[in-house]
Length: 395
Image (cartoon, rainbow, N blue to C red; front, side):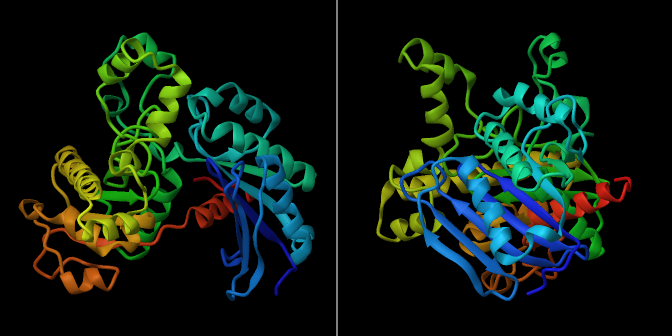
């Protein structure tokens, strides 16, 4: 295996996992790993080389994100990459009002992230812990912060503002949008294919799901908002909900803020409706057995995505390209077909055989809208930005 540098390490901290990769300067992936189930009773460490050979494959409990970060540096030592890392790129979910572009990591930035941790309590505190621990393991190696909110920085004000008194907007209560690194990767992939970025909708459908509208290469609308809780029905998140429901739960049901957070972020969505699972594959299997709650959860999910395709198309003034990406978007032909059913009025015509084969273009030749399936790669996007910032290049 290639261990001579220079190399870039990417670190993607989730709500219960750490994904990490090693790239060379040509963006070739050399090593990929995931530490899953952090803080839970059952966890795992999986690390693979680029040729598919296994480096680490074990089930083990990882008590904290700090210990997970120690595992990352230990894996680098064991594979011989630790001495060749020239920079580390970190995915940061939220940049707040101050950090609207990817930038070099500083102590000032870390302190700011600690101050705004309340904006993304499921992600930011964990990300800061991981950064601190990786920096201990790789001292003097420069870091780059890649923000999921940066892609949406140029949204027009009418797409960003909430209809509450304006002083709250000036204090930072606004729609930020998320999954930006995924959207950046997909737009780069579209450009590489020669697909115009005139009126494009990208549907990032995974454990967390969102959609974004792009007109003339610029993000003009997105479904997530102040937090990643808004928008589409998701695996365990509720998506859009009448604020009155929250008030009702507070006043009439005696919910605390912590209990509300647990319900809306971890006990709602597909899991809340089905009562059994948030896994699309398991829900489809349950549906075949006639499970009514599984049937309802799948109907609700597809309805939610279809509804937002319609509304985002209205914002764009039409639609030229629709892209499905992320775990569900890339791997579930049946869900894609259900979502698109009824959208013929937009000019969408699905090629069923292409869709079932997970081909790159799944619309037929008569379709006025090109419908595509593109695998996203947030880690590669982090490596790309890290290299650019390391070399002092502009965006």
